Length: 318
Image (cartoon, rainbow, N blue to C red; front, side, top):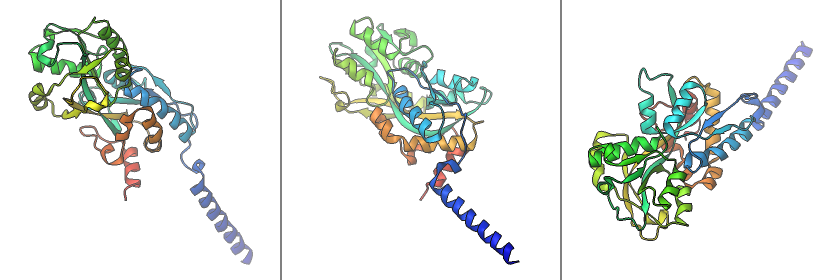
């Protein structure tokens, strides 16, 4: 009897030691060995891509996995399509594109890990351009983003609202870098872009060609009535240090980090934890990451939060 009690005692002691070690070592958590993560990240000059690169590195370290593949894509519609077809495991997307693509009958369902930051619509012209409103784009050659991109989705709605028809401008599909180069050469009259503040590609181009942002406040009331997912905001003049710019009124749309609803709860929880742990790295990559915070992160309507993400948020609730 004494021997049995001794064995039980030693067993209890061993259990306590294991529990203590598990509290100190991450190896006692879920094992992600062999896990492959592919991130649909948008255009190289955009905020999505700038955040995806350090985030991939952070996830590799934190989860003990191979560095995730960061995929250069055309933008939000391309990203959600890759999620639907299994070409990507994580994707950045604007809320309007995500909501449209997640309608019943629209294919495999995806859910949100977090709302990460808000995109601001930019209508960029040369500083020496006469264009000061959406109405003045009529008949002009306008770069509206990559084909089927989130930028094009917003550009189509804004031009249609402001001018009556999308065809009232000569719209051309160009990614941000190419569009800004064409603007510098006066091959296009204006560039549409939806991104975080500031967008590095715009900052860089202004160093060689003086740029200006166009205020779109006059067309926003009608646009917001017809599209509840959008909100209004101001881009401060100090954001880009543009020579003759004033604060401009524009629209904003939230951005989500998305995954398939089939992703395991453990993986989703780990990805969300890694997102918040990596925040200093993300801020260093782009100041848009300053908006990554637990409180707004859970505001992903009309998309649902992944149960694993919800588990993380509940675990840190005071």
